[in-house]
Amino acid sequence: MSNRDSTTVHAIKRNDWSPLAPPPEFRPTLRVAVVVTGAADRARLDPTLAALRHQSYPADLLDVVVARSTRPPVAGSAAADPERGAVVPAAAGNAFDAAVVAAGAEVIVRLDAGSVPDPEFVAALARWQHVTPDAVSIASPRLVAAAPTADEVAAHCADGALDGLFPAGASTPHAPLVARLEASDQLRAADHLGFLAADGVPYAFHTDRYTPGADPYQGVDIEVAYRLAQAGGVFVPEPRARVWMVAGGPDGDATRHRRAELADLMAYPRDNRPAAGRAWSVPLVTAVVAADGPYELVRTCVDRLLGNDETDLRVLLVGDRWSAAGGGARGSAAGGGDRELRLIAAEYRSEPRVRLVDADPGTGYPSPYLLRVPHHLGVGATTVRALVTTAERWQVGLIRVLPAGAAGAVPGVELWRTDALSRALRTERPGPQLASAVARSHGHRWETGSEYDVVDLTAVPAPQLRSPARVPAAAPVQRRSRETVQVGGARSLAKATVFVTRRYARAARRRIARG
Image (cartoon, rainbow, N blue to C red; front, side):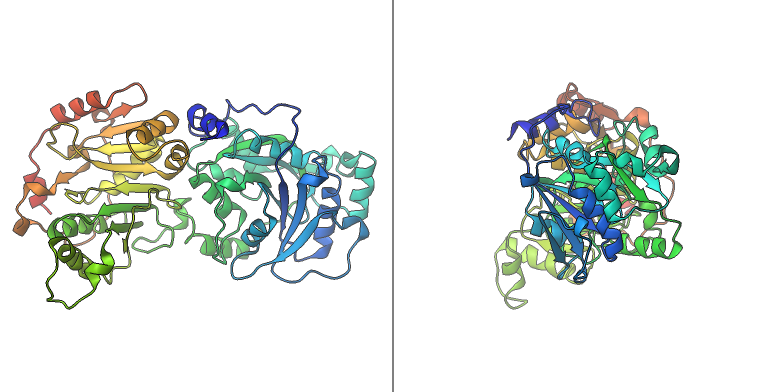
């Protein structure tokens, strides 16, 4: 564990970046690549490249990479040619991620063509990644009616007078960003949607916290920010990173395309997915069930998940012998474990929301939530939606629910926030310490099985186990907050367990019988 990882995990609460304190003057050591996107028009690209030639960040640590889907024009302004740079065409995937891979830098600065960055722009953004690789530093843009030419930018930069190109009265702040910053104490109090501050705004991130994608629809600024958020990124506004951008008018057609293309890749904002019952490549919840029990128990557990009114969900069935279970004749002799796995595999071979995997993924990334359900527990028709609602309301990183009638510290259902889990996994391994790390950074909450309709399926004989008949209609979720326990670093597991057990010890059989 590096010192920088430890600083972020143990000091940062959710997105409160206050403990991070980059020095006003620092000695850059990280290689930075500015990836310029949207460079289809050379007239838009040239002023941006001209400004990048005059950055204060050390030239031997700074590269410029132009992400393009086509080959660039041969001719261009002499003032715009960067000293160090490359043009990276998109291959099988998207242009931005292809450029990130090609750059091989430690820090990526994302910048749209047509933008004119201040000479201190790169240095101001990159100083945060020198403090912690978790930082996603967001620039401070001003909007102008038209961009200057490359020669004008070069001349004013050479004279140290770039401000002269943009009189104060001729530019306006980026209104959506300003509104979000004001509503969240400059992102210190940002919720799970804090990454939206990066929408349409230049920003920087450390490549240690980023996994490039090959999907051609990936690479849009807000989609990249979404992935960084699920990786545990801390979003920090940087007012010193000034940049001037040409204001664009409303484009309804572009908005339609953007929404359609990103809905499949981003579980948030949730209003991008208005239709229920759809399957998405990035679900809101990734549920993990170990297929290490009797067929009837596992089937009932999984079917209850699939029958939930929160349909934006995928189930990963974890088994280490799926290949062995799938081979051989249907009636061939096999060990008990393989026989149960064969039945489970046959049950879900055509279910699009169930995947058979050989190993536990350890995280829900890029889904915002990881739901762990022991195979002997069953959830109710509204359990998943209720847990997500509670997580969003309280902004906690982990919710644990003991089954109704539980006596003692028995395994329960766990909902982990992916961003909190990603951050904690940098310093801890799976186990009690991992939960403690999540509790320190995001908070930890105990809930009752009676309140969330979580039951122990082993209380009923196998012949009486049954799956829900249909997906219920969504109904408003109402939780009685007085019947929950907030657990942080100081509240002990034992106290929470005693509270839950004593107050809500009820028979599970009646709930199971209701299906």
